[in-house]
Image 1 (cartoon, rainbow, N blue to C red):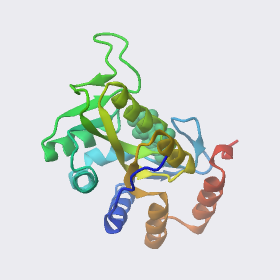
Image 2: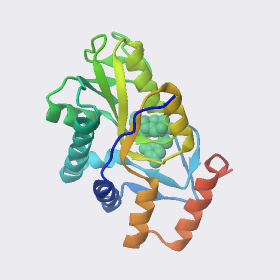
Image 3: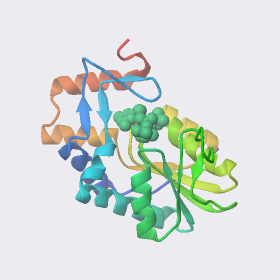
Length: 218
Ligand SMILES: O=P(O)(O)OC[C@H]1O[C@H](OP(=O)(O)OP(=O)(O)O)[C@H](O)[C@@H]1O
Ligand SMILES: O=C(O)c1cc(=O)[nH]c(=O)[nH]1
C-alpha cells in the first residue's frame, strides 16, 4: 500500500538532534545494553521525556510538529497523544493549533471508566497522532489503529525521533498510515560525530548494532 510522503525540514532535523544531545537525552551504554519496550537490547537510548524540562527545546519540538501538521495535514481536527511520552507534546501542539486533544493509553484502564482513549473523539474526526519516539513503531501504530477503531480517522503519526528501522516503515506502510519524525538516528549520529560527542569506538558499536539490532546483547 502506498502512503503519503511527509515533507520534513533538514535544518530543523539537525537542530533537534543537537538539542537532544545538548540536554543529554541520548545515552550510550554499549557494555550494559538498554532493554526497549519491544524487548530489543540496545547500546543507545534516547530519552525524549527529558525534553519537557527544557522550555526552549520543547518549544522547538512543538513548533516543528505544528509546521509538519500545517504542511502535511492541514485538515487535522484532533491531536492524539500516545501515552505516556507523546502526551505533553500533543498538548502543546493542540494548544498552538487550537484543536481538541485526546490521549491514547497503551491498554484500557483497568478501573474507573475503563477507557483506552481519554478525552472526546468523534466518529470521522481527522486525527494526527503525536509520539515522542519511534523504534519498531509498535506503540504508535497501535495508537493510530485505536483511533481508527474508535471510528475516527488517523491521518498520520508524527514524532520527535525515529531509529529508521525497516520494520517500522513496513508496519506503517502495511497499515496505510504515514509517519515521520522531526529528526532521526542517522542525523543524530552525524551531528554527534561533527560535535565530537561520540568517539570512533562508539560509532563502531552503533554500526554493529544497527546491522542486526535483534542480536545485540545476546
Ligand atoms: O516504536 P516502539 O518499538 O513501540 O518503541 C517506542 C515507544 O517506547 C517508548 O515508550 P515506553 O513503552 O517506554 O513508555 P512511555 O512512553 O510510557 O515512557 C516510547 O515513548 C515509544 O512510545
Ligand atoms: O524502544 C524503546 O523502548 C525506546 C528506545 C529509546 O531510545 N528511547 C525510548 O524512550 N524508548
